[in-house]
Image (cartoon, rainbow, N blue to C red; front, side):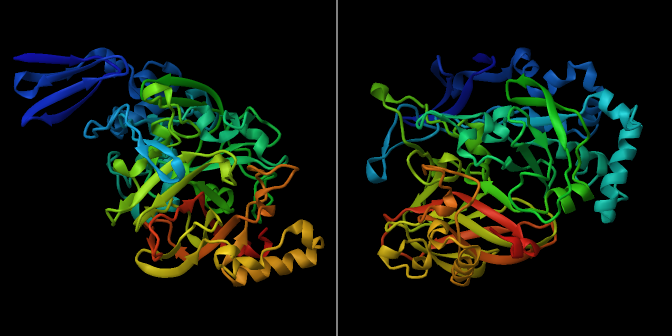
Length: 510
């Protein structure tokens, strides 16, 4: 019998060959198959654990209070994985796709985590000097927001105030500073820095769910601080909000990398408190499709199609429905989901999700604070787009025609550019006409593939179909279901982003 000790960076999975069970052990430079019956035990070398995020953080005495809270809540046990070992991918395989696309599947399925941590010196400025002080602080914040859970004292209970405090600091993705927003990334196919695709004067933000149930974190690169990243900042430069209050938020001041994640040191305390929920997040929220499931960022797919294939051929996209996607449910076996890093197309943040077949699938909406929201989707209107129906928690919302006017979508035919309309009155009238017919124009803060200073708002193909209006208590799950009613399974369902906007802001909608 053999005893296997797996060092870092190795991946293992079981498979059957001629009715014989084997353990496949591979990395980017090594692969071997060992009969399962010859294996006595599997253990992981100490070096592997020491490279994981909790161990890297534990070595730093400057964040001792947060480390104590991490251990006390047992959340450190949730940050040890690097791979999904149940997944069996393929390496060196290209699938023929639509429109001569070349598609591959993930060779392995990675996991990762990102922690935002206040040093002890930051806590000291708020009168927090020991773990009991930190517990008291967490109780003041979260017992106000969740009074029904104020009596829960077990720190391992997800409803406990300290557990909420710690888990809000952690994302279930491996996100370096440049993956928190796209401001630091580069569009290699179009040879341009991503920050240059955003209209000057607008902040660049992404919104991420944290490991605290039903919570959302905003990450921002301010328009006038291009190298900075802030957590829960709001004010001048945001896309749409009614409150003009400028809240600085917490800035990332340093970063420490682990094998399966990052620890970002921040200069102020963050919490999912009343200010975050009612002021910071009281705004138009745009969730890029690359953030809807952690598999895209964890496997380094966002704006990155560098999975080399045979003969030096690179794929155009990733066939995602080959693996299980967190936050996605697939109800039809013919549903084919792809993620593509696009170029020359009118896509927000230069990527897209396409779905083919007689599709039927749902996406868990990112959690937002309590309130009433208009739910829209971003997509592009072309003749080869399908007609589909939408449901929210199985309640019918609308039938959406994503085709352009040439393919028979007369409602989208009312679209006119702001440049053509010229006056604010005519622009408002056209916006109102489109709204009555179930659409809004493209986003005003992104140039995309358009030249000459034209934004997606002035792109005819950039539509935002209005799906529904709904009210949430901020503590419940919502699943948005898309189902094809088109006769042609080769038509491409296109998802660029989801958008949730508090309805009280609609009077100021752009």
